[in-house]
Image 1: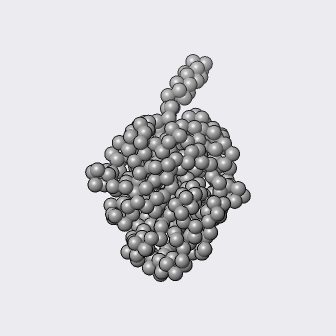
Image 2: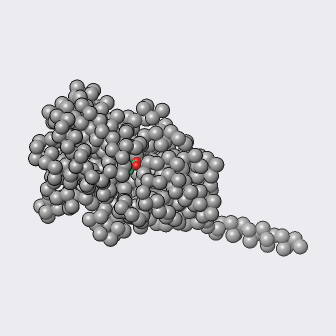
Length: 390
Ligand code: PHB
């Protein structure tokens, strides 16, 4: 009997040492429909990270499970998050391209004991909805504040603002207005369009009629941004000298071939350009190009996902693979690393990423390809929208 018990203890001890868990990460994003390319970039960023850093953290194997929410749909996002937690037993929720999809999931995090790592959704307030949210993308406050300074310095004093009528659009409108008025400029009119708008001709007419010298615009990257910049060109605004100022969502690299010369010279501010010149970005691009298959499809959600996986790996490391959402989040507060976009830190208080914001101009390379050329750096930008979000 005694020998049997000893043998049993030894077996448990040995088994324990060799025992490896599978840590599941549930990723929600648009993997089909009009925004499928953005979701494909989530996957490319994740695959690139795992190709460069392995699929294991300690003894534990990381498994990523994908769920598709094609368009902003908070009810579907919440239902899928619940299914991932209850049925799949994921220890982490991640992804979230659209703000409403992230917002809908924040109320379940605490009870589920699961952190949420946001790879894209950019409304400032999301991080205030739960202490278990960490964000590795950007906010539209963060990207739209510097472009106000750029617009004013370009000699434009009267601007009309045009945004999609939901969280990140309203934030972008407020950020631009605050920054532009601080410089001494005036926002003569502020238009909010339904998220579903895809005929922009009437909007272009209103811009012309407003008498503004420039237009500030935000729409979520995808078919709509492509349509908006095309309409700006085709309706004669560019030729008429009305300057377009925007965060980089409007000139994502995957849209540049379709925009062609229409976007040439357009200035945007953003956290990441595919052309960013650094060793870290070269390594990322090589792995992400391989992951996505067609390098022309690579765009910014891939870097949000790549850095998001870095945060999740650090969380798994800090908790030894055990499910402890608060401990996982606490472990990445103040975490700094060099991202493909440049140096970044997870702000210990807000849990949002502090990063450089770059002014870029759409240029044509010697290879005939269009790209976002970085021409100025606004260093170590936190989120100016958090005060407004509280
Ligand atoms: C968002 O819904 O928060 C969002 C989506 C796409 C963007 C920016 C923000 O390009």
